[in-house]
Length: 336
Image 1 (cartoon, rainbow, N blue to C red):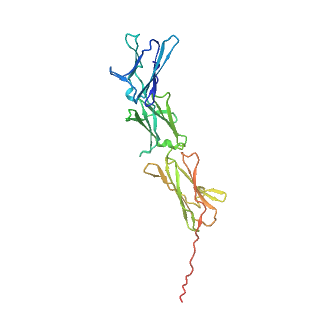
Image 2: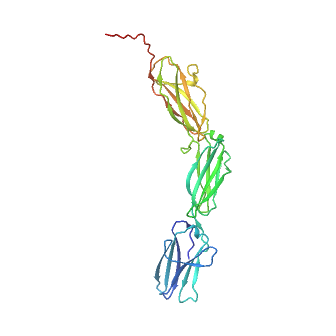
Image 3: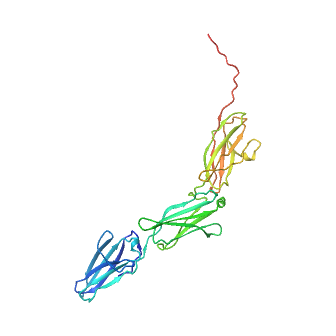
């Protein structure tokens, strides 16, 4: 019997037994399975799990060569069992046999769920990652982050699947203050007997898959009331950490001015970060001023910077709608 290949669950595998230079052409080949820990031999016949095919050739010296193939779809229950090929022939006093030895059945882990990054009530990220459909049960999952790239403590929960394979969910708590560094990244790696080498997934704050990136949801309409204080406000949500910078910019034609440098004309309150149900943050920055001109090309831009953003995001009010105060001097009603 040829060298036994690796057996992967639910993947068809071929076992081959070749008998050569025999005569006469009266050969009997039978396949048997010996389950782990048992002595009983189970005769293997063609079925949903097994398929047997063979071929024969004759040599110039009139002897024969016979090759029989056993195609099998392994399952976890095959782990540790043996497959035996028995050969009978008139030239043999007793049948001869070859065995595979104990079978090693494998199933490679598959990513069930990408890295999840929920935030706990303490303001830390509880990163989790799930792998499924692997066999045998033993698997090594490690988390690495920070400047030292040391392995971090994690917790693994392994569950059984209906088909006999396993699923693991690994969790690692990442201090929330590390998310203030735009260069911060972390990695989860895993190794299993079914794999030739370890694999990993990595994510950084500025990766598109990082979920806690600020979004500017809206900005109030810019309605210009001459000589009356007006307030422009927007809502920024879904970010973590709260290391957020908001800059209000005045734009007149092509001229751009940072409003924060002109506190005499503009009132810009300090930002108040509100914790949301998912423990991310939301804020509503605003700018107030009193217009003394109805210049139509005036607009304001809210610019947002955050460690998760490679480039700032911004939202503009667009040009204002002018609403002048009209004084009603007199109303006369004439009756016939």
